[in-house]
Structure formats: C-alpha cells, structure tokens
Amino acid sequence: MVKVEELRIPLPLSLNEYEVAHRFMVAKASQKETQTLAGATVQVEKREQCEHPKFGSGTYTLKKYHIHKKLPGWMKPLVTEKKAALVEESY
Image (cartoon, rainbow, N blue to C red; front, side, top):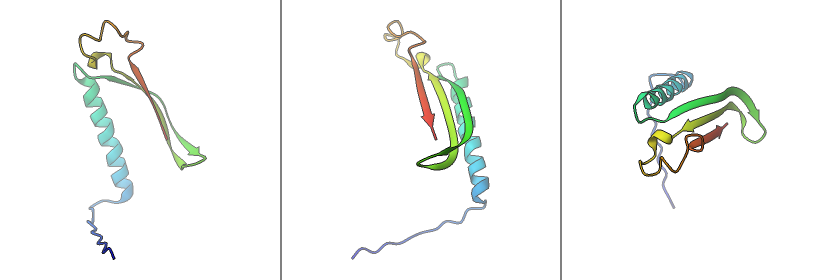
C-alpha cells in the first residue's frame, strides 16, 4: 500500500492575481528576449478568447518566432530570414 502525502503552501494572493502576474512575467521575459542583440523577434499574429471543442474556454494565440539571428554563423547563408521562422499556435 502506498502512502500519499499532500503539502499545501498558502500563497499571499488569489488565483486571479496569480494568473495576471504570470501573464505579466511571461510578457516581460518575451520582451527582454527580443530586446537583446542576438534575440529572436516574436510577432503575435492573434490573441483572442476562444471556445475549444475539446479543451473548453481559453485564449487562442498565434505567434511567429523569427530565429535567423539565433542560427549559427555557418547556417545563416544557407537559410533565408523568411524560412527561419517558427509558428506557435496554442489554446
């Protein structure tokens, strides 16, 4: 028989305040990453509230990461800036 113990750490803020703070810190980290000289630029195409058939309500985001500046020097001549983009779609 396995004994399961649960530890709870009370936080000095509500769940809503935590979610707002989390979104703020993610945005701040993304901004800091894009401001560095070798940082990849992030282009947010869409950000809207949505209703997903499987996962329920949430936020739909569509982002493009332009990573040409992050590629190694020997690879930059082989890959154009247009081709060096990652697309992230999340719910």
